Image (cartoon, rainbow, N blue to C red; front, side):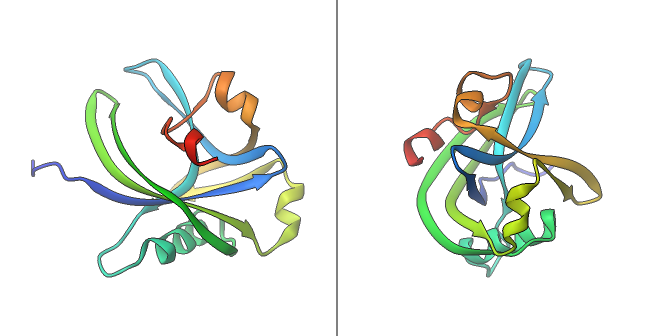
Length: 141
């Protein structure tokens, strides 16, 4: 097994009123439900802005526009019992296809794995069963 590395990542905060579009998951080791805006790794030679556009296109089959950098977060966390470390470029943006805002659930795909992308209110993300991660995102919202 190779040495673990810091992962450069880009995510997009997509808003619908006071709601954010998130992917929800659960870490059974920490017994923790989490919610995270969509995005993913930055490829070698790719800017973080280009990565966030590509990731939303790959995960949702949707185009985004009005991309603006909200900030950069260093995130060190435990996931499934392993330490992970990422430098997270956090962008805001909006869907080109306005009809996507009318849907409560969007069909996402991560590799071959389907997942639901759901709109959650800020109150739900703060107090609900799935907490917004990383917590430093609150400072950028």
